[in-house]
Length: 339
Image (tube, rainbow, N blue to C red):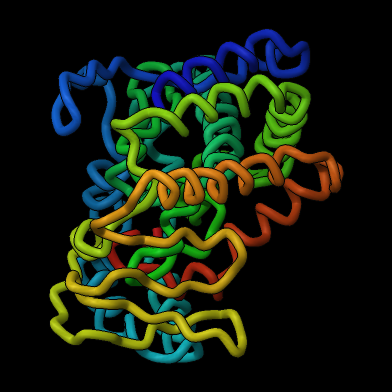
């Protein structure tokens, strides 16, 4: 997947509009040694969003709720109905103010540096958001997103939940990419308007223009024996640290008339709404099953690269989905949707 990121970044450097804005994807080296181990480059001069946001909030807003308070409240209602979870989410956001703009004030004291680094952050967030949506990258909690303390750029790590696999987690991820209030706070006074929106549009247009190249790159993964096309129930539970022992527990869903269930690790699959659902069998897949799953995953990517809707309309819809309070309220507590 890092190789895919490298090639996509190269494509962005060749398109005129994205090259002018230096839109690119920051990557790191990965050397696989066998099916279960490898060496990953240490990304220097970076900090995770969580590592900065949690103490920063306590510094700038000591009288508001702490991160732990919000997490506990979110966990208590994680299997409640949508209305209850939305009410709790609204309560959390009213007691937890965004602080990420202070990251740039703290690290870049010169006004020119401050402006350039904040601009680099906004642009890189836009490029990463669109690419992440196209490949269905999930599990974007605050520890899986790094920010370079020298350049201001965003770096995505832990790319194991992709091709819409986030939708088969015990508590499904309902947003196309992370665009919470703290991330938007770092964009400046215009928020998602202006630089962020335009860079999203330019990135999407460039990737659509290179649809065949991208699909060729991803088709290589179809025959890669080291790649898992789905998230097993065991890994899904571990990702969200779900310790419940019930065999099947209802999970709230915004899709009327659709039932989403979470099975124990002994279950063979998880049912989810939507046509892009991936079958999450843990064991016993034969080659035909694997190829069929790969076809569904790559088919979803190909649909996103079509020009059925303009880039402007598509980006507008994605931003609305990513910032919709109903979607954010229904996410797993560890995702930290309030920040």
